[in-house]
Length: 248
Ligand code: SG7
Ligand code: ZN
Image (cartoon, rainbow, N blue to C red; front, side, top):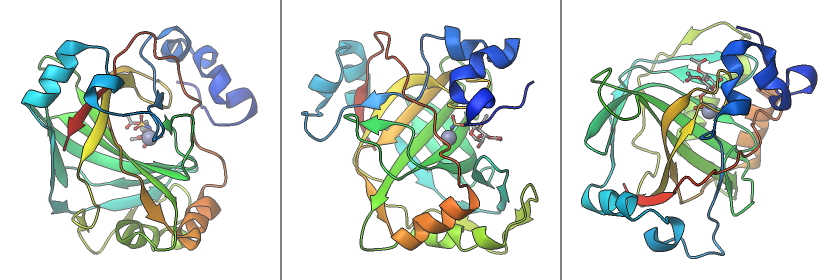
């Protein structure tokens, strides 16, 4: 596998050519991120999705995030800040249980809302507990943050470790990671996409929270000091995929 990055020769425009394993970045028809419906448009299930089966499935069975807490470690790998927290939370969607593996951040955000790019996007990466069952084997929950007056309590607890991290050195956290102060509720955009980094593998079930949370300028600065590069992939063509709105 080739090394990749966000700038110049190694940047997103060239990922598909860096090595054969990354070819899906150019050839795939279900890539992420994408532009999601924005505030201006009506974002009901009816208008956000043109696929009646997706709407029915969403209405019949809401998704559920079970936020537990668990042991974790944190690493700055130069491309993002990632917290490994296997099993620290569970995500139930479409009759399948997904277990959290890790979460990490992109700044600015990867998905856009009606063309608008927020300052930060949190990705909670989950894998199906039953391994090789039908449907997508991975589910990523995306949470967006924009600049606001108040600091975010979840980010506060994660980002306080960031300034002292040495690049590529995984550091165990003394406290178990808890998610109860993330205000996860309401509607989520749901669609089938890919990893947003090489190898850009498809078969990823994306659920992006519609509600945008806020973080303070100081919090954003802590992250951007650790990861100065804009670590987002540009939005990819929808290619006829439907975007459903589900309740969480
Ligand atoms: C970040 O985004 C890392 C990757 C992650 C990738 O580069 O968090 O994770 C590891 C373990 O390096 O890749 C397979 C995976 O989780 C893509 O994840 S994303 O699509 O949610 N942005
Ligand atoms: Zn990500």
